[in-house]
Image (cartoon, one colour):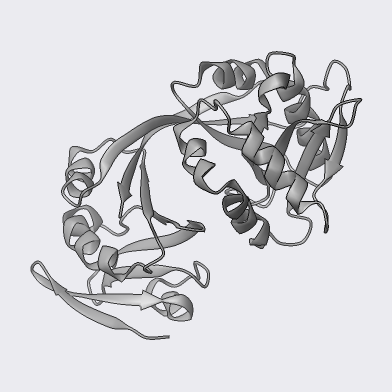
Length: 282
């Protein structure tokens, strides 16, 4: 893997990729990671980027005591190093510091959407009735998952999910290809009695701790909304994750998505923090 050096602002910044990221920051962020940093300082200052969609990249928070001071220079160095296929770049910020916003807005980002981070302890309450057949993701039914995902996005109220409408199959395929470790995924279609999908629930084990799981997506198709299928999908998938060792569920939901907020609150989820999402389209 190559290492690049770029002179930006008041000093030199290095770019690390892939396996050499561990050498820079002491831990691996995966094969697609890119890190911009100023090595040799009392507290390393660095900014990392990670792929999380077929054409998307996520930028984390600058780390180290000098991270905020260096953020404009780190951004200026890292953004030109992103792969050419990356079209959308995001940053999630929970600090609400003016300096963070100014740094991202200065690099062509917009303040895209505000979200809640929510969580609840497991086990969750049982679904009041079981009307759906849960079908897990398996080799051979990926196409049905992708088709259902596309149908769930129709008239969806989440701006983040609507980003996938241009190519839902590619977006879901990227997530299917990710490695969440042994037994680290609980993905289900909910089929009605006539065999048609009512929706889908995607739970993954990549939370803060091994027993912390994340609701990656929960959605229902247009003709199944308002009938309690979303709640059943969530609670039954949570029960399956509990049996796999999950002890806490996390999720994120946009402020404006009031139906989803009502569902999650009624299922025992409570807001942990509010954060905003900056987005830049290349």
